[in-house]
Picture 1 (cartoon, rainbow, N blue to C red):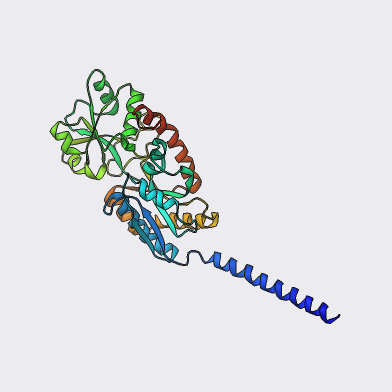
Picture 2: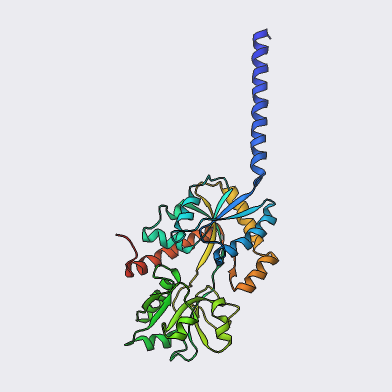
Length: 323
């Protein structure tokens, strides 16, 4: 072998070795995810149920992932501002979003969001807020069917968070099936105050905010707007159990920006599933009434499509979709 041939052989050998080391190094780096703190954007103010729920889950996630998982509040624009910022983050698994059905689906349908549903890669839905429809205990109706019969020929006021709120849209959907239409009156925090004052006949409200009045015998819950019965009101049926043919789910999910590698999504989904079994999360669930259950990335994607299908016609009927 000539000197030139030996030199070429050595160069090829060195290059092959270096390439092997580089590939091994990259594989090792990928296997180490996560290797630094993870930020979770919550597009709601601190102290809200969406914020406190994610902060509770983030503590459990930190244990599973062995890195800090930090909540960053970016409220405004009915959660559109923070969501829009989150979807623009690098798809590396270090910026996630805790996004609920409002900014993820209904605001997109309304034309209020500068992003698409497909800009979010689902890690999984992790909780369902315990919304219910409630009335005064002495109201002339005790069930949703009795409410429908009462509403025919009479004006029934639904105290709600606004026509753009998914709990409101869910009641509009149910009332449409029953053949009546509520008069929508919005309040910053609808509840027993409006019922007691006669300002509303029924209200959409989180279970924890009406529970005391129900126990005191002042209020009654007509339907649980959740996929299964609430522990706080085990005797109250869900919409599907009442024959409406669908579950109501005011869900919140954990998402990554579009383009995040599948292996990172799966790592996070596995950690999220385990985190929901943490005693800290279970204690918060019992205290708040929130349902904590993990839907897989695939299940979450399917549910988002189902929600978009029913929300669009309801929102169009309310004049909420931009032409």
